[in-house]
Image (cartoon, rainbow, N blue to C red; front, side):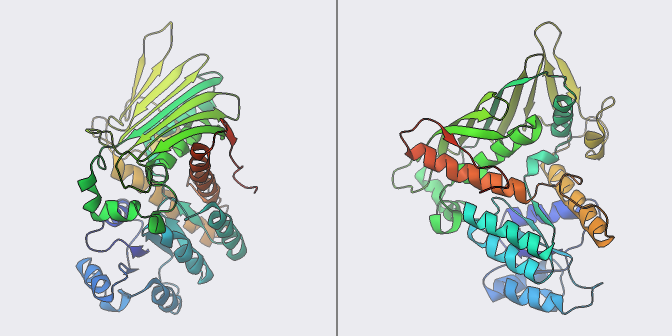
Amino acid sequence: MGMVGGGEGAFIGAVHRIAAAIDGEIALVCGAFSSTKEKSLSSGLGLYLDKSRCYESYQEMFKQEAMLPENERMDFVAIVTPNHLHFPVAKLAMEYGFHVMSDKPATLSLAQAYELKNVIDKHAMLYGLTHTYTGYPLIKQAKHLIEQGDLGNIVKVVVEYSQGWLASKSDESSKQASWRLDPEKSGISCCIGDIGVHAANLAEYVSGLTIDNICADISSTIAGRTLDDDGTVMLKFSNGAKGVLLASQISIGDENNLTLRIYGDKKSIEWSHLTPNTLLLKSNDEPTQQIRAGVGKLCDAAQGAMRTPAGHPEGYLEAFANLYLNFAQQIRAFQANQTCDNQTFDVPGIDEAIRGMAFIEGVVAASQSETKWHPLLSPIAK
């Protein structure tokens, strides 16, 4: 693996590196960790990389890595930069013949996401997107329960992702906040683009449905703040089910509080990121069933996503690692000329990327409109 971004002082770069390393399948061999040559070098040396493979730019990295023997050069690049660089880095990587694992959102705009799909198709490369929460074992179990009909027909979905880290003006001074609140680097949305899109992806992944129509109200609660920090979105799904999505970065005291409730006409499920080892299966005429990671027989996908015995938390880093493990297996299948589509290996890909950008742009447009309901674009058609 090579890496673009994630140098000294960056949060998510370290998370990607830890997740990629957990299963011993992936080794970090090179990187362009910063736009500053000196910082990129010091970051790489701090990770014990060879000086010759600590590059001053991603352009130089792709050029030099492509010239190395196949058994030495990187197989793929992890993109952990601010949003505005996701597309140009991914595009150039594929033009040089490297697969891509990108932080979300995939691009700065929906138009770029469609263009990225064309690049992927043209160069026949693999692309993964780190919608991390799909990697949790009990999220996979919840998806399985719905697929086998335990909940019946899905009638309502409620998903919430609340944080409090941008609740005051003084919070804007951190490195993580400064670029997320800058439209040039973050895009047209902060809150919806940063965490709301995770909530939307999780709702679709588990339910097996798509969000077809939205009614949105997003806002900035801090004076002078250009981009949104709070939002409410009403949802209509492809089967007629209704839903609500709440996303907030000004909810004081909330700690990445992601919750999902899906209601069928037979039973419902409830999952919380704060207690990820527990999935509740509820009904009106039976006691609530508490499904625990590592206890009893779970579906194959959930079993495959667990690493520890019951009682040991399967957390954020492990969920992140599941995406990297699946992507590594996908690359090996690609190299062996075997079936390697994203669905087979349970890796979010370009279709999820397009849906994510359609959701972000759709929510912003809907919030600015007097019209109540707005359709979302399909994942593959303009």
